[in-house]
Length: 196
Image 1 (cartoon, rainbow, N blue to C red):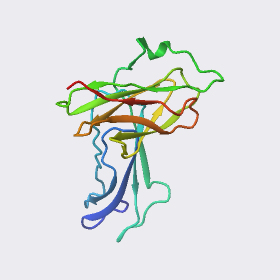
Image 2 (image 1 turned 90 degrees about the horizontal axis):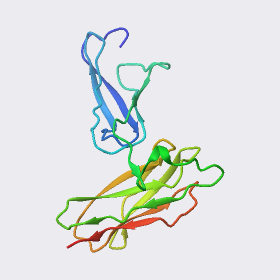
Image 3 (image 1 turned 60 degrees about the horizontal axis):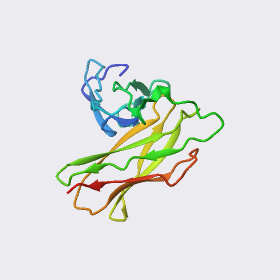
Image 4 (image 1 turned 135 degrees about the vertical axis):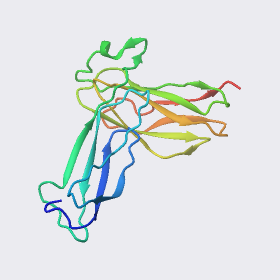
């Protein structure tokens, strides 16, 4: 804050994120002390899933007792994924050829799981490296009931994503495409085969 406040000043900040890194988004209250400066920490979660790099953005909102700068109200920091790239069809993803003029096709694995497992992983992958980022809206299906949307982005550098779903009491658990512009096939799906 410039000038520094005479006493603690509560400031409203909105945190947004691009990418799935376990970041808690939404509105926060940040208290600026009389020194005029405070650090806002946004935690990420380290997982084992190879994902596209993302960003975290903090934006100061209007509030009581202060005026928001028109040029310094927002800050964005990059989040770099540190996981190893997945293997696609027995080959490293770097071995995939570019799609060229063709649209990429998408496949969704059909994994096996025991009902004693807590979760199951679906592998979603393209058969070639796209020229631009591909957005895929996926839908989990439990006993014919569609669950919450899952949005993933696939790129030439990261043409594969792992989607982890919890296992409940359903008789059938699957993952299917809901919307995918730029994809050649629109019917890719995978289902869990329970082993017990």
